[in-house]
Length: 200
Image (cartoon, rainbow, N blue to C red; front, top):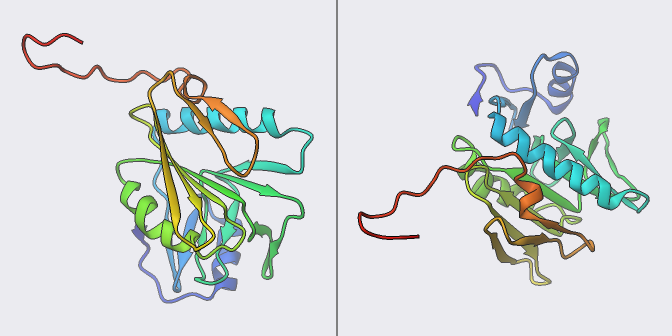
């Protein structure tokens, strides 16, 4: 993510620019940050997850939105586009923009080499300020692995790691389980080289 060279903007100016922009940008502390393009593997994992979530939530009080859905963190001022957002009725919209959500229940980020540190550290601090957020899910794209962070009553996060194509990922705030084989459908993983003489 690279800061665009420009003067400090107001949130209203950012939103006006974003409505006509050819690419999405995050916004924080008066600056816009252009979002880098994603790999094919990143997009496959995201689309697989989106399909599985939508099929399991259909007809219920919650729905998922993919990466075109903007989220605003009122307490920090960040505007951002998570890879997937789950929101439950009633949807709460930002004061300055009716197309921006402020009350996600679950946020998914598919990790990329260029954004993994930002997603694990900076975004976690921002997302932690969203009162409605109950789970933050970090999904690897190069190995079958998902980290699920669940907010505890004292404000800390409890971590569970789902690993391996035979494992099944689950949410805690919704009765949803998804096999990792479905999350990583059509994804090829590089073979792990073993030391000479070792066998799998």
